[in-house]
Image (tube, rainbow, N blue to C red):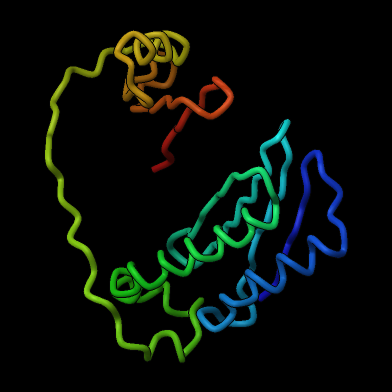
Length: 175
């Protein structure tokens, strides 16, 4: 795998780089050598955060972990990605275009029975045109972590969501 390791508010020391390569390197048996792994280490006050993103054809495998110790965060993120790969293997295999990113040994392994995705509730609502700022206010008033709306400027369906640090994100789908 090809590693792209970056740091935000932190210098990537040789020890951190080695810890990332050792822990995330355990995932190499799942992927082809050409697979890129994007690792971002960041520090905010006493929060040590690692984000790992592995783009595979057709989807993205991603995890982020936060703890008070960067080495603990690195350990946790590796375990979670491995669990994701085992849990969703059958789904990944069904999307045939994804298989080019995974190693043959992983593809030949017996897959665990996937957990069924259960939709417990369906909501219908009118999508009223508004600007993203108004959508954020509506989201806050409802106490939700995201809000779907029709963007008054583009006349397309968008989503605003609450991010860590009391900031907001806007999703504008491309068709």
